[in-house]
Structure formats: structure tokens, C-alpha cells
Length: 420
Image (cartoon, rainbow, N blue to C red; front, top):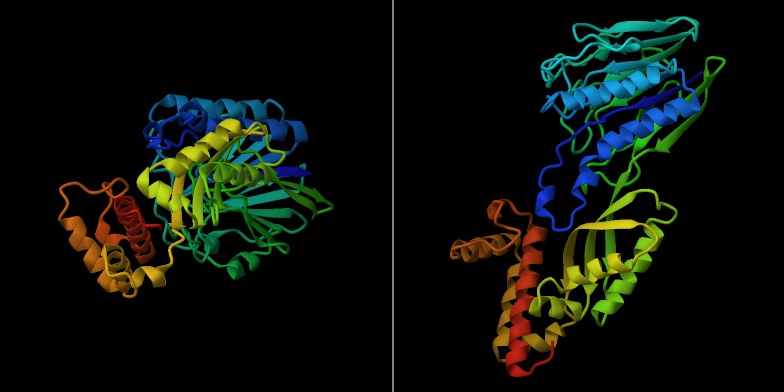
């Protein structure tokens, strides 16, 4: 017997804000959730699986129109025509109360009801699937308490959309514990809700979050896909993660220490990306690049903002091994400044460095000073215009101050002929 366990498809997730990125491959990004689902169906048919489990959040919310539902229904028809059954629980995004539009059901696709836990028996395979859908977006109670006891002499699977006892970055829904799951006597728990793959427990029972099928933004990094599970003689013979994402998100940390010019940075970027995307030509790679280190490029960036991002973009133009798109370039740079010598100077340079050191030695004073300076501006700087500066983390404030210091010192150096 063979089955697939997937979750958190978020078909047609809106991916808001893409139009604000110049040169963004908008259509490829917005179509990625559909393509990943099609790849899942291709895999199910190719592997001749007996059934597919979808553990919640098939949709991102109520459909904007019927096309979203019709696309999903068409993929289900593809599988059922091959004799593949599908079992679904609804999660917080596609709960009974969230999806108002309806389409005719597909024979062979079974959705767990939301009023109580229930069991689907697959007699010919000796499988019992237990689960319950979300009736509403917010489910604060432990649903596992209602799940039926394991069926003797069957392979028992629990299907559950849950945060367990809490997972970072995810709201608490249907909270429960690993101990509660183990007490059911099942063989496998097919979980959903958490977008990062996690094998919570390897065996007796195996408890798995497969992660979402397709990463949707720069925080959902790395391979995304599903679990392919083979069962022989009532025991799990193999459980394999299969990547299915068509766009893969990465956070690439690039050390610019000692880089003398933008071409050195470009070369380092290309070397880092070569290692990152090795053997992955078939998908688009979306990158958030964090450039850090002590480098003369900090001065260049202060004199000509955008210099470093342009160097990174040039690297993507020269890269032939895979399709790249840089979503954002973040800077965490320092100038190669002799701070002790600068502090000893009895001029504007020494005054600036002294002020910066004094401010960074006390987080609360830094926050008060920054808010005072920003309050005197008629317009906030780029990157701050859509946020509340009073809520910024201290490390963000220190980075902003370092950028301001570099800009001021660059101008002072140009005016006085001093070296940074």
C-alpha cells in the first residue's frame, strides 16, 4: 500500500505586493501554488498511490471566483479517474465557515465532517482514517479527544490540522500534545497547519508535518512538497519527502568582508548561489540576500545608494545555471573605519563617531534619539514609510544608525579629503 500526505496547499494564495517589485516574475509566482498541486497529482499517478491525504488549508480563504474551486476539482478528477481516493480535512483557512461558494462533489473525494470526528474505512487496504474538519477558522479546543479508538488489525491514520503545543509563526489552533496522539494507538498522524516540514515523531506512531506544498514568500524557505509513504504488512516500510515546489525561496547570507569593489561582491554572490541551487535548474529560485561584513562597499553604498543591490542584480544576469529572482537585498555592513583614531579627532568626523558610539551603548537612549530625529522629518525615509518606528527592534535601529553614520562620514570625507 502506498499513500501521499500533503497539507497547506493555499491554492491561489494572493501573494500581495508583488506588483511593487520591479522585474518580479509575477505570473510565475502567482501560478506557483497551482503548478505545485498539478505536480502532486502527477506524482500520485506516476507512483500509483492508493490514496492521498490533504490535511487542511487547501485554499487560502474564500474564493475570489469559481475558477479556484474548479481548478482544484479538476485535479481531484484527474486522480479519481486513476482509482486514487482522496481524504480531506478542512483547516483554519478553508473551514466550513470560510468557503461560501460550492461545487458538485467528486466521487472518490471524501471530506471529514466538521461536527464531530469520524472514520473512513478502506476495507481492501485494511486502512482506517480518522479525522475532523474545522467548523470555524478559530478552533481553540483539542479535537484529538474526540477521535475514535484505533481499529484492531488495521493501519490507523489520524488526520489533523493543529498547532500541537505551539509552533513559532503559527496561530494556536486545535492544540494538543504528542502524548495525546500517541495514546490513540494509531500508526501515523498526518498533520497540517505548520508550513515548515517537521518529523515530530519518527515511529509508533509516525507524526509528520509535511509543510506547505509551495513556499509563498521569503520566510517560507527551502524545499516544499509532500510525504510519500509505503506500508507493507501493516508497518511503514519507507517514508520519503518529495519536493514539488516550482518556486523555491532562499535567504542567502553573503559575507562582503574585505570586498574592495562591486565586482568582487558579484563574484562572491555567484559562487554562493552556485552552491545554493546546485542541480536545481527546473525551478525558479527567489532570493532574499543579506549582505554583511566590514567593507569599503559600505562607503560606496552611502555615497551612491543602490550600488550593492545593483551588483547583486548584475550577478543574476550573468548566472546561467538556474533562473534567479532577487526579492530583496538587505544590508548589514560596516565601514573599515579606525574608530579609535576617529574618536581622537577634534573635528566633525570625531564628533559623529563619538555620538554614534554613545547612542549604541544604550538601547533606550538610541530609541528615544531616533524617534526624536524621525519626528522632525516631514516624510519618513524609504523602508520606514509603512511602519511605526516606535515598534522597530533595537537591532534594526542600530543598523539604521550605522547607515546614517556611513552616509555622513562619506560626505565629510569627500568634503575634507579625509579617508574612511
